[in-house]
Image (cartoon, rainbow, N blue to C red; front, side):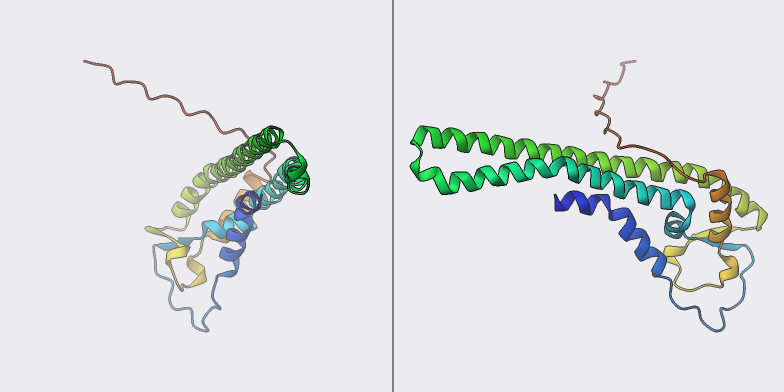
Length: 200
């Protein structure tokens, strides 16, 4: 269950780290280099209204899943303790049957946990994709408006003049274009079998 919680809150921790990773600005940020622009996607995910909505909803979904899985864990633990305390007094065949049934229930619970974890990861990926699709035309417009000839990823830039950063403008426009995202946990689509290549 720990793995599930880690997977569900990965977005929040990564985004928080990214948002706080900016170093203190130097007193002299240097010249603005014409045509060079910078964009910080992790900060957009952390600070945009849609990004914050995704983070909050993913935490809710993780809690729902934890609530769904907890009774399984409790029942399995309880049965395991009963077998440990009363196992010696049971006939060997009955003890074996109960052990096998417990093992099967534990495997089913693990399978359900893995399924829910994959669903949460897939759901998060789909929401991030929706944000990426919404911000893409915004970045193209900003790139043209600011006369950029090169757009760099902020994660690969250690220091820069903040006047070259498009992130704040991108966040403002995204907040208007995509003020929030509403979604539920999504099932992972089944893998489609590869179609054999048609012979010419």
